[in-house]
Length: 314
Image 1 (cartoon, rainbow, N blue to C red):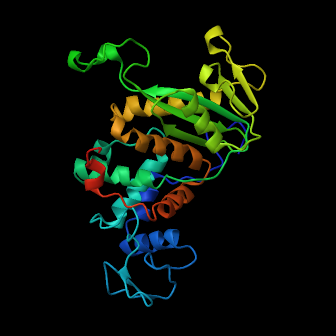
Image 2: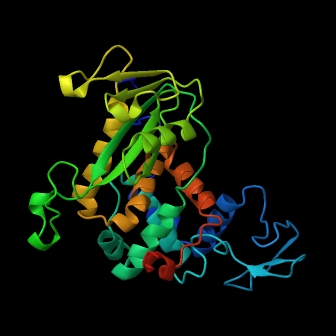
Image 3: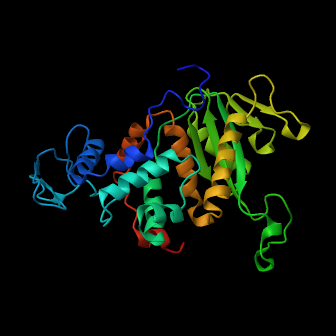
């Protein structure tokens, strides 16, 4: 295909029709999930034993560990643990979330899958758990930039206005860095944008020799990394290799998702949506089938109960 083809033209995608057909057979769907979760053979989620008995007539838990004597299924110990939704619904939900760059709202999942909005909301957050990864340090060069998420003060009801100024007042800061060599991003919701917070985030996620590019924010001055900055306040956005355009592009996609898909994101769950957009960006070069398989493997050990999701902060 031509080098000027649009988008990630080298990827092999799956159409919606193909996705529906792919998960139409319950037996194939189960075998696909099993293969993705355990590519080297089924292992016990309790004791990690490979001494497993497969009993096709003993559903919904067809596997039995001959060592610890526990019965389990492909859902056990994952974000799907104890879910009454069929694997078909999980498969289609995975497809929708990995292929829609601006995300999928719970109302859309509710309509597309024929489940309640409450179930769809829980389902979406459980799938977002599968995007959580720790992939080591970035070697650089990296771009670092922060943004603020939240509604404008002028658009809020009078009773909820902070009346403490304009700009970032009432918004939640999010910081991120993008590794130019790998095109991977890493982001985090933070309490503030002071020096200790921003520099701590950068040093925890980069090699000591990584070249760092930022804007002229005072919080980045003295960062213990090779550092160059551009002065946005003076209309400077690129100076040689120094710019933060890649990270700013990621924030633009995140905000378009909030505005166009979710419309409103609570501070309590902001980190979950942030993880979603980070993970989808990082997996985007993969074929669609591989993206979905990576999500199944990433779901292992990340159970998220509804009661925990809705619990009040301590």
